[in-house]
Image 1: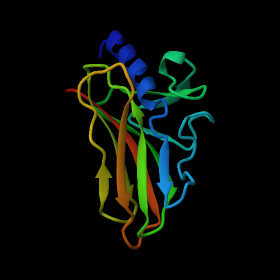
Image 2: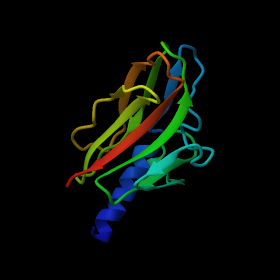
Image 3: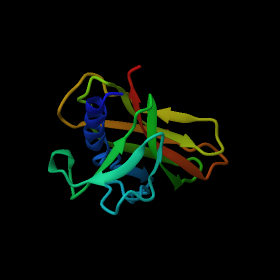
Image 4: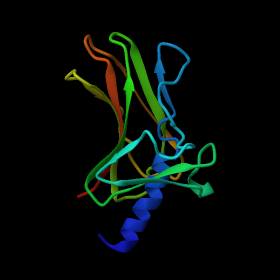
Length: 158
């Protein structure tokens, strides 16, 4: 991958992760998601097939003082947080993303219940735009599960 393309992806991904996940509700006003705005660093988020840190660049901060900076050179990468859930409860994962690079094919959110075979994905961002757009997905935890994986996916064009 050319250095300029990688630099562009790093910048775009900083915008993606800037409050990319802002709400995970659990049948109450309490937010189960920890550090959704990346104000406390990157913990408890984990990066898969990429590098996660944070930026103070005001061009990529939607709210607060920081944004995540997630970079990758692979075709698919994600950041993940695992939260505790209760069977039968409905959960909403939502947030904001910017897709303004033609090298990025898809950005979407996914809820996968650990121990269950079900996963639910948001719609993907289509078309390039320099403004934040909302993504969200809702799902009910199936019987017998007690945790969910919350993922933000970034897929590059081949």
